[in-house]
Image 1 (tube, rainbow over the protein chains, first blue to last red):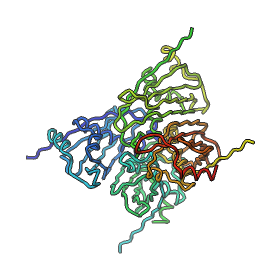
Image 2: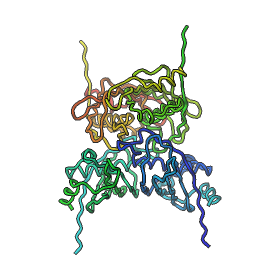
Image 3: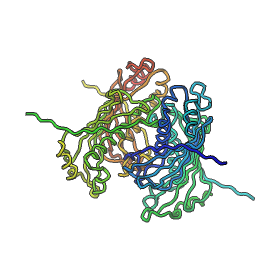
Image 4: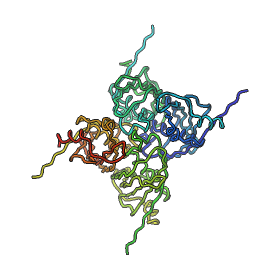
Length: 139
Length: 139
Length: 139
Length: 139
């Protein structure tokens, strides 16, 4: 039997003027920030704050970023950053992304992989218990 | 016989304070800007300015961004953005990237795919003659 | 008799990771973006969108920015950008700012002056009727 | 007799695409970064790196930013950030700015005030000897 579960969270972001470029599109690099908001808010929806993870000694550097751009976003658009976790983290955690505009058009899809790192040693480590237990309830 | 040619260009970028984050690393989204500088300077080294391409009616939206992060860059580091073209563009153009620090450590590798677009029609189109001819001399 | 009126609007902004620097403070230049959000949302609260102003032929370049920084903001802080208009615009419009954190501490104060410009001619012009009438109701 | 001395340094900055906005101007908040480059390079020209100042225990938070915008800068412009120190620092240091384009047009003028802070105590302190002695040679 194939069993598939996932957990997703929708964050709303209003495009700022300074995030557009002279093509009138949201600059392609800005989505890295939007995706960051997406995963931070997904974690918060689980009762985990990224800030707290740093306080208890973890850092989460990004090791992979991939974005496929389909349509542009424009100034003042209200975007939905749909962030999805499809599997339990191990030493790494994978976030999948879809950016949608108010007409529900899919603007881009992406994936960000982060690793858990012990801030003191600078070494990769396993995901903290708080993240694992919260996600186990959902996945 | 396998024949391989490519054209690359090295751009130097000094990390700005505002480009770091509280992990003291260059923020992962900033490389999208560095990569943009890399391809703009590669084109300039061929005698083509991106600005001129826009003037003669082209836009080059990014359709794919991929970055693999290996090591962080830090404030005030002098980075080398090595940008490489491995094949002649068609309706799209692919730039390959390597970011190196002053110790010649490889910090990240990446790839950006852009499409040529006719600004008036908003439709994809073939790479302009000026880009093709300059690259044919090199590849 | 001295009569003083003003109109203000509070916008909430959550600090993003990429907006911090290695001092762990929100980078000093980021407030320009926060202030932009503040005035855009103030105008929206009046029923005027900046996007619409651009559509009907206006641009609003900034001619003066002043910020006095008192305390830093940190990652994940929920900030209040209090934006105030104290007088009816003419060819220029002045926004006054206060940034407060969740403990209601005053982090910085600022002022941004913009001019109304006719996008076609590139010349300064008087504030559009829609802005004047909405503000007259409030001031 | 009134005696006036000052020390200035010119930094060159090429405008990046992502620094423009949909008005096709360099976004007004970007100059905070340009000004940062200006003062860092001025200090480097004196043999002082900001990075080193942080290493020996200082932080330099900005307490005041003022910019008067006269003309816009555009994509790919090569700008000169002329940074000037007119007086010896005490607990604070004042940098004066002029941004010029390649036609030598004055685009904006500004002023940034920073304070020297002891990173351990978080308290303001006097400018370090290394900065004072280098500037005394020049002013």
